[in-house]
Image (cartoon, rainbow, N blue to C red):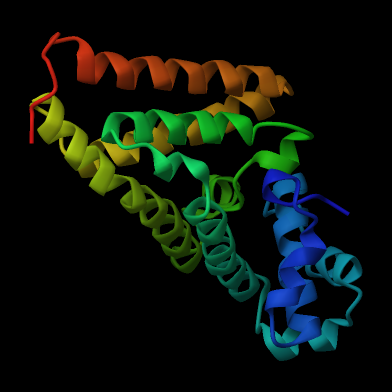
Length: 219
């Protein structure tokens, strides 16, 4: 069984779903798609991994595409809980919170590549031109997570007197870098390259807010 984000076994996800068959299919989608990719994951393989029949699959999801969209939304809900409880929120300084977030993302890069890479980032690379529903679900997930960083970025912009950027654009840039780091890790088959890219992201953010050598504004 493929492990989940931050090493959480994918079977854990089923405990939060109302229907065992539906939950098992979503579990299977999270693991199978991250391990194989969307196109290489068949309904048969999903049913086999979930331990359900094809009839049960089509009872809950009318197509593989519908299951993928549901899996993207479920991924968002599940990972949102993980990030909401993460310790990077605890720092008093907003820049420290942003940098701690980047450190937290780096800490998650461990184990097999399929265990730490992003479901929606994996799917959208294959399905963006074939399914508007999947593409929209992936954007909703990635952009929704980026939005959780915007308040801290806005506070840091104000406190450190940085101009020329918006909270929205920098929040999305962090996700572009992290998703790109995952692509490189897959291409090289080496998690270390993802860690290097996330280190570069941290250095960029530090320089962005400190290169003007201003003292933080007093509130």
